[in-house]
Image (cartoon, rainbow, N blue to C red; front, side):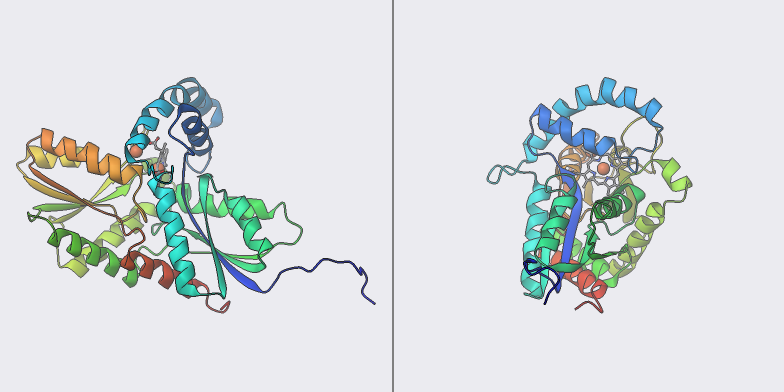
Length: 337
Ligand SMILES: C=CC1=C(C)c2cc3[nH]c(cc4nc(cc5[nH]c(cc1n2)c(C)c5CCC(=O)O)C(CCC(=O)O)=C4C)c(C)c3C=C
Ligand SMILES: [Fe+2]
Ligand SMILES: [Fe+2]
């Protein structure tokens, strides 16, 4: 005789994978943008400045000006068909394709660290679908506390609220994985082959972090440099042809250098006429690649004497990109499937 005769059936025995990217506003209007930026910029993993000093700047200045400005930028890249940001579109598609590749044994879902769908809601959904084991995949090849760690924090923070927790694994950085390097090389070669010009210089532009985070021990800078070194080796290019830069500086502090925008300007001024920029740290195209590189930096190049500019798209949900994601997931699921 069971202890509780009416105990409901509990789904069980499944393995889940949760792909997590950075985030996205729900819309380009001021309120949606403000909500998104507030969640983002109050994350202590992102802004390490003490709150007493940071909050007056954030609430007094940034959240009163940046939402409108960035809303206009997002509007230029918005996926109007689905009424969402490209990062959401690509992340969903990556999850759908991964699910098709892995088959019925594994439940695949996706979430955003900031905005929707939230990590908590999708972890609950995976558990409700019977996943007793879940692999959390922060979609960042290079580890940074501001990206990878904050995704993992959020997942474990959610488990704090659960009596019956699933087992959780997290995906380690894969900045030097041969499958990833090969995918980057192939996508660069394929895109360059479509151009009517041969770029004199190619930039590998990574999202920056404040220099102080690096000095406190964040491995991000070294991971970016290693990705670029392996990519050069694979492509047979030297340090003059493939240069590392850091983009998306935010605030008055010094960030990792050299800065992408300053490098683009200096190259154009020094007489370089053709330039291509790739963004290996971004698993999917987003505001920082489509607008900041494809529009802002293209303008900087042309205004300073450059002629031909190309942006090499991210791996996104293409075959090479999906091969990387599937490879990483299968490796990290060993022993579970
Ligand atoms: C101090 C602030 C920030 C740090 C540190 C930071 C690190 C960091 N970010 C990414 C990837 C992305 N960032 C994106 C947008 C974005 N980043 C910041 C600030 C910091 N990022 C802001 C305020 C924004 C929002 C836009 C803006 O107001 O400028 C995005 C794009 C999201 C999209 O929907 O398109 C990505 C992706 C990495 C990889 C990283 C550290 C390694
Ligand atoms: Fe960022
Ligand atoms: Fe930016």
